[in-house]
Image (cartoon, rainbow, N blue to C red; front, side, top):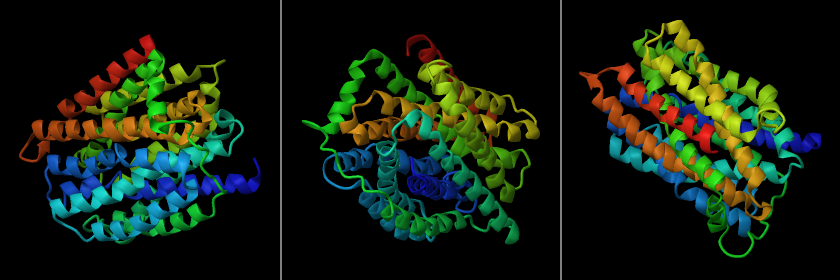
Length: 391
């Protein structure tokens, strides 16, 4: 891989997750706090992303596999996203915010699998070369979280929390330019018939089917992390202005694990795809167990590491596994399938479950966190057992 190609792909990966990381971890604090939305309403706002991930990746993968250069699709989606993010920062009512965030998510959700497929299409050995590019995702998420924390400390508070959406809009401007600077990635034809139907047909392999079902269940629990962690930390006595930086610890761990462990563990001679992915699911299980038992504040802060490990060994390793087993001519659709299952169906169901649990186990605005986090702990436990026994 040439230096130019590495810089192009790394910049693309960095900015993709910088945009996402600017608002996703901390928007819930704005919704539940200054905007006074309920747990269910907050769940529905966060549900816009998984709802979109069940639809737009299908069209994005189809266009990239058959008709349009992937870089152009990415640039278009992020360019329109700039306007929608600035607009969402001004809205304070649930219904209009839901509509705008759904439109934005429809565009952004299409870009995640396409960033992966663009990268994989230019690598000669994805398992060995991609960790050096994937590392920029957690680095971006961590740096953006720390930058937002620094800004809030400089302003002596988080205000109404809309700064995260404005920050994401500014980053989207840079991302649009970077998309246009990517190497040409023309469609490969997609083979005969529908590329997405071919990707779904891969589930005729029982092992792949188990992987897909486990991915749906385990990935869905991420919404408990995103919806609950900021408020959970606040209830433990953590200042709101420091929460983005604390949650950034997960991304620092993710960066180190991506660079030093992902390629090593994914190798069949070490753990291989099965056990790497199983370790990822188990990492989330441990995190939710720590939340559930009401561990001391310092332990909870350090435990953010487990989210970073889980994301690397479950989500990224899962994408590598799909790239490994999918035919090259349907690469975009295969990556869209795993995004549809994890950040689409999985996160949507997880959002509904998290919203229900937060409303069910709360009284007068006070959450019973032990009961709330028992739900994702049991879900991830089921995923670990399924992967260990049947994948």
